[in-house]
Every structure is written in C-alpha cells, then in structure tokens.
Length: 460
Image (cartoon, rainbow, N blue to C red):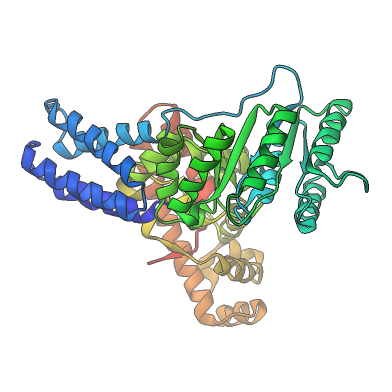
C-alpha cells in the first residue's frame, strides 16, 4: 500500500539532497511536487490544500537546524503534518461501561462489511474479549449465511435468529438479549447495505442506532474505490455520526488516497485496515507508523509485533546464532520458509523495512510466493547429509534431487544460489538493524530478523 506515493515522495527528497539550505525557491519546487504526488495518490483536494499550507508555514517559518540537512528537515516537517492528517494517535475501540459493547458495522453493499465483521470478531477474541456476531441483513440471505460460515470457521459465537425473526430490529433486539444472557462482552451487528445510499437504508440504520445505542458505529469502505469511499464515509457520518472507519483491500491499493483523506473529511479516525483475505488480515491503524512507512522510514514496530506473534523466540535466537556462526543449513532454510508463510504476503513485510543500510533496496525485491512450495519440495528431496552440508551436492546429486522433487536441475541450482545469497543478505540485515539504535527496538529487531525473515525466495 502507498507504493506510488512513497516512490514519488522519495524522489522529491532525493532532489533536495545536496542543497546547502532551504530556500523559498527550492521549497516551492518541493511543495509543488509533493502536491502533485498527493493528488495523483487520489488524496482529496481539500486535504491536499490544507496539508501543503501547513507544511509551507512550518518550513518557511523556522531555520533549518544545524544538525540536520535540508532533506531531513523537510522529511521531519512532512512526517509530522502527515501524522496530524492521519489522526496523530491510534484510535482504539471504545468499550461500554456495562457489557455488551455494541458495535454497528455499516457501509455500502460490496464494501466488505461481513468479512470485516468476522475479522473484527477474531481480533477482539484474540485480545481478550468474548464477542458475538449477528447479521441483520434480511434482504440478502447469502450475507447471513456468509457470516454464519465465518463464525463457525473461527469458532466464534453468532446469533442466527429464529424463523419468526425476519426484521432487522427483531434480530438485533434478540441478539443483544442473547449476548447478555451468555455473558458476551461485545455484540457485532453486521447491517444491510445498498449499491447506493438511499433513504430506506438510512432510516433502517437510524432505527437500529436508536434501539441498540451502540458504542461504536464503524463505516466499512473499499480502499480501491478511492474518493468514492471518502464521499460515502462523509454521507454516512452526516446521517449516523460514525465513530470511525475500516478500510478494506488496503493491500491492493498502491495509491492510498482514501486512507489519507477519510479522517480529515469525516473528522472521525480510521481504526482498522484490511490487508488481505485471511481472517487475521485486519490491523489496527497507527497514523505515525503509516506516515513513517510512506516516507521510507519503514514500519519496524508493526513488523516486530507481527513476527513476535508468529515466530517462536527460542527458534529465532537459535537461528541468529546459526547465522552468526555460519552454521545455517539448508534444513534451517526450509524450516524458515515454512515459518515465514505464517506472516502473510512477503512483499508487505519487506515494505515495512526502513530505507537504511543493507535494508535500503528490500522494497524493490520481488517475491514469488508459489516458488516457496517448490523450494521446500527441493530441500525435502535431499538427504540429511546434503541438507547439513550443501557442498556435497554435485551434478549427480542435483539430478536426483530434481527428479525427486518434480523440478529441474536449473531449479535446484537456483535454490542453492538463493540460499547463498540469503545467508549473505541476512548478515547485512542483522548489521543494519543495529543502525536503528542501541535501544530496545534496535535490539529486538536485530534479534528477530534472522529468525523472522530468513529464507526468502527473492530476486530483482
């Protein structure tokens, strides 16, 4: 996400390098390029205007610190204003004083409401809550069936209603009663949508709001629709007073205009983003982390959190030891590929890396997810001795391994080459992690990287 905007802003900052100081002339050029980059990223024009004016005032109203280059000063100013635009702090879900906390999920048809309801229920369950879901979309039986399937797959509670309950208000009323009786602390209400906003839809949602008195009303929008998503969010907010938004399909939106606009236009925070189809592909929205990722600073905290949730700490420490002692075998290489697949899309992980040292070019690395399966099969076709010592693998052995794995000798050669490249790259990455500082975060990243990102099938 934000790939196009990030690349363009990086070019702006690159052009400023070499300047001795900020001047009205070079600042005007930079601001003009930043304005174009934001507009091309589909950021709302009013938001762009406010953003540029705020950056200009700060850039022209203070001297460049002697310890910083002009580029660093501009990056800092742009970063701070981008965080302000995105909402400054992470907006967490509010909980009711007395359970259950009712969360209404609203939005247009096809925006991803039902899937987001399931993902949010899983997120809450993993974070100590006991959620119950209910679909009050009586117009599309498939919507209620979809939520039911999600609930059963995730082993989460759902109120499916009785044959007599054919009205949204009846379903909502009974679901809340059931949630209270069964001790559920959160009730997620998946509401009906339309292809377009109409009076009947808004009347129904207003009635549900009056009945349930929800603590949160979350608007779900498809990030791929850009400014249409922002416009719809604004209209829903005017009628329902939404408390926040969830943007789906952020992993497929290279521009990011909706994410950068929705908070400024509605006045309500972006609380979650959907970054994939899997049930765990819902992430809290951190304004500061997103701003830093756009500006090439990476998103190290999110990367650390993701890896620490998925990778065993003892395994990570052992893998680091093996890499540093040059004891990392093909068997370890295979095991790491299996662990990496738990973390989600690999290019998304690489995009979280900061643009420094040995990590500088990682965002340009292209990862073939299907290649990982072939690589695992190739290593599995080796003998234990071959996995322990790759130098034993001569021409004859390569033919046997290729035949056993259903691949070609060229594929085996490629794997061995990538294995060697990976060992070299991981040493660079471990060193670059130390450049982040000697504090807690730098140490955690240095420890995590070898065990967390070893074994990538990569290439230019």
